[in-house]
Image (cartoon, rainbow, N blue to C red; front, side):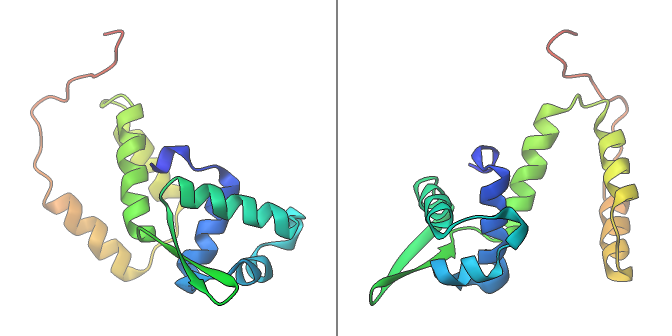
Length: 133
């Protein structure tokens, strides 16, 4: 589901995740003005996200309230799985290391990362999963 979401749709999802739920007007007021999106563009993007199963709707008078069908954390985990599937198993460590280099972390984040590494069991040999190998 996540791999079909466009960058513009991600921007909409970030607003929904941040607010918990939102109307079209709420999204419009929160979206970065540099996009230059009209209200019709936002409505189109919301409609696409509903069709893709990312958003649920609830009617409130004449308006719809949009809410996420999965959390941002769940979406991030799904993205990580999809990224891992696209990278050769022998190259994943490089991708992870690069993500660590470009990211900012709190002390709590670092504890979580260290714990994940401490509990990871070592494989004797990591087999390449490239289709050409």
